Image (tube, rainbow, N blue to C red; front, side, top):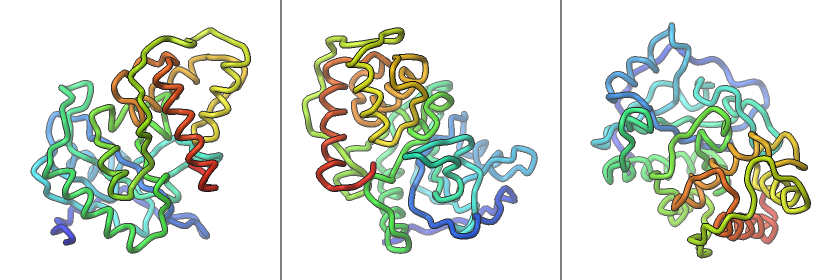
Length: 250
């Protein structure tokens, strides 16, 4: 059942570029001390930020920007060779204080509303399972949301994402920032196949570290360290193979 929508129009939007098709959903957390403060900011013309939807911790759903318009939620972003994900995505904010103000689990009511809404979005737009992403996936050098507590596995079970059931508990380090060599070259190429933007495939630099953290927060939340370890390698190999086997660009 489609959740009841509370309309709270934001002035912070513009037209999507001609020819752009909605093919991704980007999930955020608000990272503020209250949902009310977040909604006020997303509707403040001076803030110049917005999203299409916001979901409160009690499950209430707010719409700020119509889906056919471009909301300003992604910022500088990259995924699968494409820049500026605002053009082609729907942005959803989940009320959560985030890492700065006391990060906590997302509530059941919140995720139930999210899943019901995603079913509606999927009925209106052709979005591949692999195009349900976090803000940190598309902007790993700037963002950490929705973070390691977000239930990506549950979303994937419902068809809104890709997941790996491979055992990822082994934290034995393989590589870290500053390393070079064939292992690093393969690592960066795999991350690029998944969709992440890595600036230098020959070196484990700051870019790689940020991307590893984002990958871990999404697909290996047991340990978000930025270190390439055995558990991360196993999950990365599996996610990459899933893409190759289905022919789908993650």
